[in-house]
Each structure stands twice: as structure tokens, then as C-alpha cells.
Image 1 (cartoon, rainbow, N blue to C red):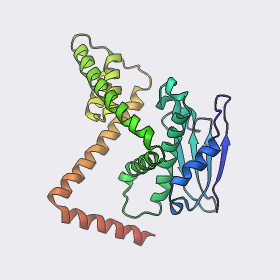
Image 2 (image 1 turned 90 degrees about the vertical axis):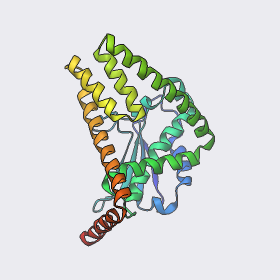
Image 3 (image 1 turned 90 degrees about the horizontal axis):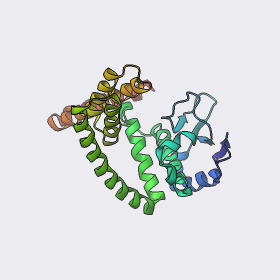
Image 4 (image 1 turned 60 degrees about the vertical axis):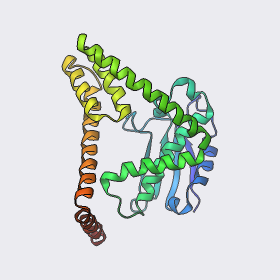
Length: 252
């Protein structure tokens, strides 16, 4: 069954051929990974929950309703600078990353051995791999840029941290936390956003971001624990995972 590709709620500044972009991107996906997806919608609106962190959603099959994917264009604007978004290819890459990520979630429904705690990471890796396959030259430039931006980001963290020793301001701690987020340093993110809230308890948006950072830190800790367990007791971990997979089969 062919996948229906539609647009919804596009704004005047959404001028690209989004249906054509998605159709071309789907050629990089194995057909069996698309089985069961009935429709892909490219939406010019935000999610119903009005959450700017949601770039796409996957709705799995439920009773008579088939699986569908929705890609949201408006929240993508914060993923790249304004001058980069003027390039059509930038939008194609942003759409590819989100679309492939959601297809990764769909493929998980037919894959065994992917624990719930690993599903988001699996979809992220799945999406990144296919996006690199679709845009190899662009990703060579992106990787170089990320390396330069990473060095700059770490230098700014050091300078801002030094500044807080003399002038501790809520906005400075927030900025350090934001930059530490890009580094995946969740301990630093939590610490500086807690300090930001202590200095300015009325800061809007920070409590929600802090909860997300704490969740990310807990997830990272769980990964480290599993890695350590696999090194110390590899057979015990293997048997535990085998029992879990067996349990899932029985419940089905």
C-alpha cells in the first residue's frame, strides 16, 4: 500500500515542495521499514500540546486506525539559525532528521530486543544514519562546523563559569546550563539551572527545562549502570535480557 503524503496548515513562508521532499527521502528507507504507515503529514502548525520541543510525532496503529507520522515545521525554526534556514537544503535536512527519527519509532514495533529505555536513542541513531545517507556532503560540512562550535561552546562555558564566581547572576547560570546541555553534561545543566532558580525563583520556563535535564541525567546514569553491569557480570546481564524478551513474547 502506497503511503499518502499530505500537507496541513502551511503558512505563506512555507514555500518548498514538502510532498516532493518527503517522497524523495523515503527512497532511502528500506521498504519493509515503511510497512504499515498509511500517511505522513507535513504540518505548518505546532503540536496540539503546543510543545516547542516536539518536531514530529508517530502514532502507531490502534484498532482500525493505521499508523501515521506528523512532521511539524514551526518548531524546527529553533533548530537552526535564521541565515541557515534561508537555504532550502537546511529545511530538507531538518525534515529528514525528524522524519527518519519517527520512522525509527515505527520500525521498533517490528524489532525485538529494544527496551523502552533505549527506544529514543535507537530512533535518534536510526534517523541520523539515514540522514547522513541522504545528505553525505552536507554532513561532512556539518561535522566540521560542530567541531568548531563545540570548541567555542566549551570556551564560553569556562568564561561564564569564571564570571559567576565574581558576579553570580541567574541569567549567567541559565546560559551555562544551556551550553552544557549541548555538551550532554547533565550534572552541569542541573547544577546551574538550580542555581538560576535559586537566584530568580520566578524565572519562567526554567522549572520545566530543569525537570527534563534531571530526567536526562537519570537516563544517563541508568546507561552507565548497565554498561558497568555488562562488564562486571556479562552473563548475568545477558540472562536478564533474555528473560525480559521471553516475558514480552508470553504477554503477546
